[in-house]
Amino acid sequence: MITKANTKKLRQGYSQDDKSELCALADQTENATPTKQLRVHGAMLISAFLVSTSFTVVKAITPLWDPLLLTCCRFVLASALFLALVRLRQKISLPSLADFCRYSLISATLVLFFWLMFAALRSTTPLNTAVIFTTVPGISGIYSWLLLRERLPGQGLIALVLAMIGALWVLCDAKPSRLLALQFSTGDLVFFSGCLLMAAYTPLVKYLYKGESMQVMTLWVLITGSFWLLLLSIPKIHLFLQIRSLPAEAILGIIYLAVFTTIITFYLTQWATLFLGPTRVAAYSFTYPALILLLEWLLYGSIPSSATLLGIFFFFLPAMYVLQRRTSLAP
Image 1 (cartoon, rainbow, N blue to C red):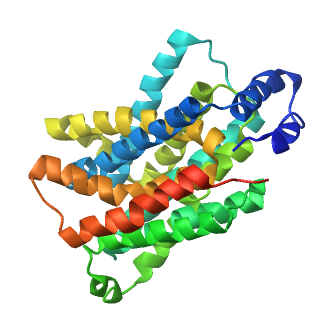
Image 2: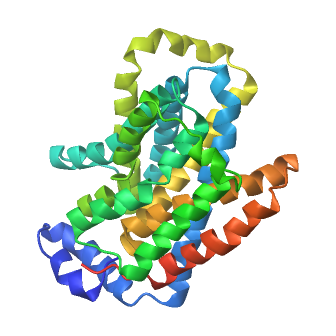
Image 3: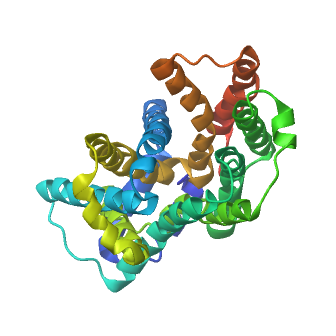
């Protein structure tokens, strides 16, 4: 979070052109009203809900085509659509080499995470990956301390642990024996490597932010992400021709992922990171299991067990409230 204590730091180290917008953001954040804070948290809840829907969509369309090519098309389409939208509102110029490197570094964390996730799922299970993913907010907090000197007080650390317990409780369907029975493999190590990269995403957004509009930052993160994915897809480039024969549900799924779970979630997450800080934004990933359960209930009538619901209310929701409401991110 940008506070009075580090506003002075924000005013240093940037060009004169960068300072005006960055200082305005700092001043705005210092005097953030409860309404403003509610808007930021509301944006993150929307982002978390959209990300949760992506699991259902990806599960439905992944069997229809190569997962890496699906992700590549998702990023390329998102880049093209967002480029057209931003051009309607402002003039777009090519970034400098230094800025291009900034955006490439941010997008590389996401792209490599997706790539390692696909590689890991060849030799591990979705449950294992979901359990391992709960480590991301904690790792993100470590990165935030190293890069930004942000730290959680004692109650924030306790809340983070409780939120992790709540997420694991939901993932194992309130049966701890399922967690104890897990057997970790090489694929789990591969996925954990991806989580180490994913955890760096929000800290890097804040660390490398230089005052540009969030539309511009989001656009170039998408474009450089598309560049990385195209490079990774070169060995499978001949399979791109298969897109002409994909069923309608696959095409609609790619469009949905590009617009709702890429453009909108990237923008909201990066914008919220400037106000809440990387650790608190990353903590919203703990809402995914509960939101996925909600979606399964709405779409399929699948009702979670009473023990699972108790875990959400007694571990997960209180911990998230304390973490987001009472955490003070000190420089």
